[in-house]
Length: 130
Image (cartoon, rainbow, N blue to C red; front, side, top):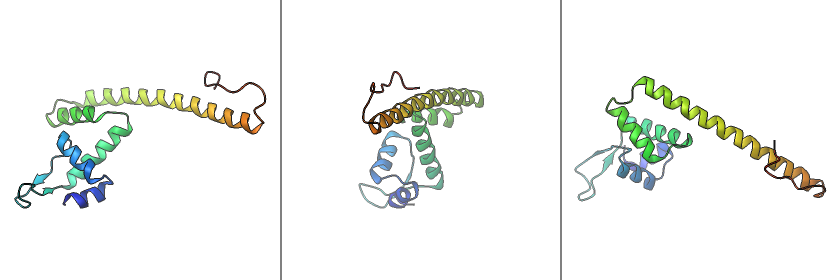
């Protein structure tokens, strides 16, 4: 599939797709068509790779980290045990993030209640949010 179809299928902009190609995250095939700018053909595997990139970013990984992990896995240097350890570490980070988000939600709720009550009493602070 050409870049426009790939972008539509993955929900990525064409600029993002081109950026991922430049970073080496995606490896489309090239054709002889297009002269100095040959057409790039994306395969179904590239759609799966785009989804992995999206998941990695959602987990808080940088594109550089994602690229390094993908390269290690491609070379067989990321065994199952290492992948499991990495996922456990990521789960711990997500749990810490969830605790922080709970704290921020409690603060916002307290602030809304304080304002709805006419801003009487001490103003809620983040430090006091539970």
